[in-house]
Length: 273
Image (cartoon, rainbow, N blue to C red; front, side):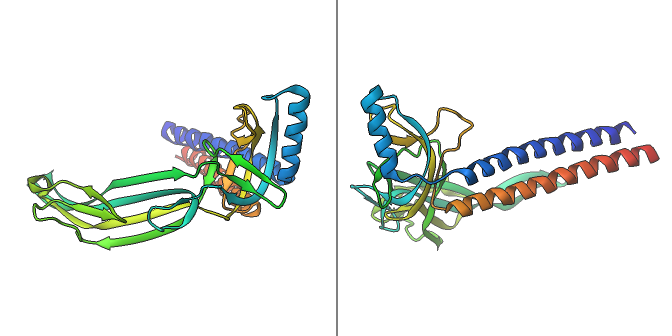
């Protein structure tokens, strides 16, 4: 009986937690739906007028803007070699390691799969921001809900760059990375290397919600001081973003009801037994 009641309590609390999270996400979705898109020209003009009357550093406005990713000095992504305002590239070594484990009959050896990141690189273009038909505003995407696009994906089997010493000299678009050699690599066998890169291409349409401010001396969209406000920098459209939240709300609602049903079932079974 006690065990069933404890189970009912756990499921009941889980249901409450899921319901609270659901309400929070639903509130954010409603808030975003009610926001109107600002023209970047209007944001810049509001900033100029407030700075003229109240001085620099006093401007703060929660805004939604849409436009193309832009920088006067775009960079070239490491793997895809595209013009971007941001990229993150990663190389993962997938391999098997011969591991020994104890059994009731002694020990046995098995090949176990592992993954190690051997290279990771990310860069932002200087002066990254959003440009619409009316103007440009810089964005500092740190601390944002950040969504990028896939730039590159490839998998190479085996050790194409294995050197004579038994180590690896992995070459990535002109870069060389040593992965050791000799006895250190005994008991290892490489499956291959997975190359991935995500980023934001120049000219990609962005959906940005955040705080337009001049706290650091220049106008920029960055994270709001009020943590209840969203900060979003996304290649997804507003409709896609809100749709994803809606799907999460539905999932959390179902999870809450399932948890409460399980709690009720535990109580009934406990009473019967």
